[in-house]
Image (cartoon, rainbow, N blue to C red; front, side):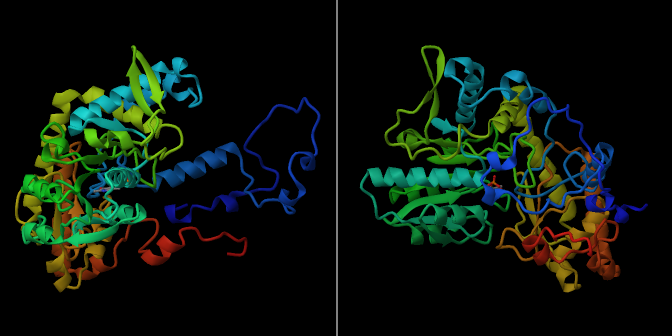
Length: 487
Ligand SMILES: *Cc1c(COP(=O)(O)O)cnc(C)c1O
């Protein structure tokens, strides 16, 4: 049987075959209708596959082998930091003291878990240069929203109800304007200049007394460091606005420079990216938010505090924006991040930054002769190429991304950020060897040659995957096609 012919689980189904064995019932069987109201009881049997335990194990193992993950191959997805997630994190999060606790347990019985959360907050304060941290938000986007809601509460506590606008650069991650909108703000776009940095003249033009905040990523989404960050902070603070740092990707700044020292008032981090929580496919994540002293009163509650050598959940916070997540955040991801920070130590984290940056620059320079480099300057943890040259030959960036699948690579982020034509955003991360980087570079060079000599092979890619080129829109809008016996 070839890979393409793997049967559906429904096709494996044989009536009466079962994949479980339960002990015999030793209590009286109850009528379903004595437990569930009649209107909720289904009239027809659910159409479920009937398979043995071995059938189902083989089925899912085969499916997992078709998947692409960091553990199976190089995954240079820009802005997503698909680095290796150390397996020691998994050992630690499975300690019974962490995996068998209940969020409603009395504080004195979960002192270890509370201490870990408290200590993680302390480490994140040190890493970001902030005065206090909440671990509640479950993802970067939720961290952004939480941060903006606090900024809003801060302005309103000063009677500043007219600050209704948030400035977002045109290179920003899509979640930034989305979070600002969900938090009830209007977004104002500020342009990038020819160097890929925020245009200071344009920034001066848009600030005013209706501005609540500027949201910024630094290094920005092009992988470039905003050199004039202190001047930008002065402009925004001068107008009474706050500076929000999108710290989803901290791989280029760890132990080198801190958002708090750059003048930022609020920062969110993506622990599932920089701090090795396995992610992809929608979660789970963790998006803690750090704030400067004047924003502390507005943090979500409860906050984990230490009083008389005891760790406590502090609910007594009258100006808090409230709870933003059930319980205290995604504890499992926080345990992994804590393990990572403790295993790496300060020198290890510094090495992360240096290797992430050197890997990205090495790759950028080696690929520069074959692709257009829209901003020819040193990059930080990631860089952006443009497929403009190949487009003239009839080969789009999407085609090249599909062709990479034939080489066994997950493609980079494409058509992002929006201010680059035919963009390709590559983030190699620090955990990859030079051999891996070279092999990927060779594949990219080969694809650029194919675009010149044999464009069809790129235009019709992928050739070696289980399914060929998908209808992208249909796949996104209708990811699950309903199975019927006839189909
Ligand atoms: C990933 C990312 C986000 C969003 O984080 P989620 O955890 O996916 O919600 C925001 N900003 C930047 C720059 C990112 O890379």
